[in-house]
Amino acid sequence: MSGDSLQILIAMGLYLVVVVVIGFYFKERANENSENYFIGGRKLGPWVAAMSAEASDMSGWLLMGLPGLAYWLGLSSAIWTAIGLAVGTYINWLLVAKRLRRYSAVAGNAITIPEFISNRFKEKKKVILAISALFILVFFAVYAGSCFVTFGKLFSTLFGLQYQIVMIIGAIIVILYTFLGGFLAESVSDFVQGIIMIVALSSVLIVGVIAAGGIPAIAENVKSIPGFLEFFGIAQPQLTPGEVQMLDAAGKPLFGEAAGYGWLSIVSTLAWGLGYFGMPQVLLRFMAITKSSELKKSRRIATVWCVISLVAAVAIGIVGRALYPSVLLTETSSENIFITMSTSLLPPLIAGIVMSGILAATMSSSDSYLLIASSAFAKDIFKGILKKDATDKQVMLVTRISLLVISVFGVIIALDEKSVIFKVVSFAWAGFGATFGPIILFSLFWKRTTRAGAIAGMLAGGGVVFIWKLLLSPIGGVFGIYELLPAFIVSCIAIVVASLLTKKPDQSIQDEFELAKTFDC
Image (cartoon, rainbow, N blue to C red; front, top):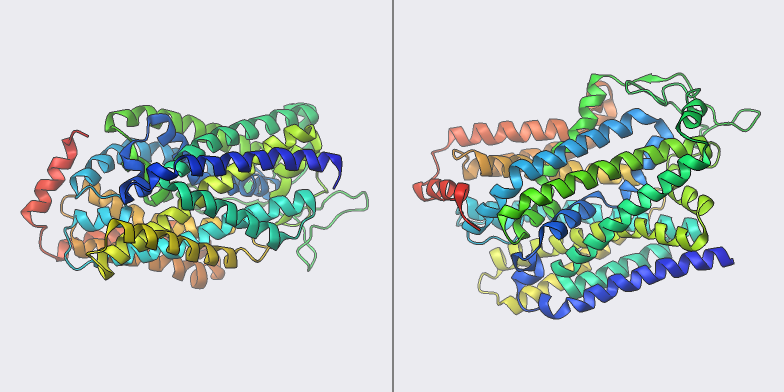
């Protein structure tokens, strides 16, 4: 290993040590009871709530997947996705956060999303609890796998290490500090990781722009690529049968004529914003904040962080194409543009610190996914359905066992190093958005919503994601739209129809709905 690589490794290693220390620091408090372990005793401050929500939401795709998308296909798809996410972030904090914080306290002091939805409808037979917990287990296993892919790609690219080995090592580190410190360790480390992520993105972008000769030089460099800088067109890399981009005689990558990027594609990418309404890792931060009155400050912090980070990530892909047009010649390798720029343009030790931004993004998400998935099994399935008299100690034990099992599934998913992070994340994002987004909104804002409507909406939304992705999307045309949008719409229709066809909720449910509007907490 060269001296430069050793410096990078040392910087990243120190970061990993800090994260594990955070887990040990919160170990005692987290193990006091399950409420502390799962939701931090509802003691998050506005800064930690905001930064940890955004850091856990974005994951490694922000520093690898999104820049890679911009590098490979140009501005349009990446920027419309970023716009959808930024708008979705703001609306979610504006509309959902305060009402969910209040309603979760009113509805039996719920500390998980499945528990909140189940308590909201006062169900005796825990059908909603089972459905929502199972969907969380499935989609978070996929999500955790995408994070482990990021970790493996990072270390194999930087140090030439075997992908599978370093991927498994990364998984073990995440499991360790999540296993020890629970939600508090996860949230505090996510706060730190959120700071590292935005500093890393901003630093690499600034250095990259300077190295490329400034914004005018970058624009002049890439405008020759058909569709690359268009909002309504998209670049088309010319590929060999082996999915490698072809080069001309001068060694420059070849592109075909630009393809159109019409309203259907724009709506499809903007639909990413709908996913926020159903993201458990974000919704839990709303529930965990100390006081609902502090959510306004959190909303401002989260929105500013989100806009800066998304714009920087897209811009890095564009700048990277100008600087290194012939270095990354496959769709999978294009997701390494952030790594390429960091290691090429920064001193080794600084590059190592910046590389920790990818670790931060990866770990801040994977810890959330593992904790929420394990709590879904232990709290909602084990205690909620299988063993209702389970003690708090038993719940904590089952949580840790299920965390290990879910991690193994995530590792299995991540074994394929050719996985495209952006595509893996997009499927899981659609699954959560369509399964939970509509019912969260209807539960909070439509008193007429019934238990039958909730069940119908969740099954319809989650089911359509699978059907659309696996059966309809390959047809192309209008069916090529991002599966989240049709699944979200179908879920909303199912909720309304099933609710109107069944009798109104009991008066106690309606009274609780009204109380949640103004409950002081």
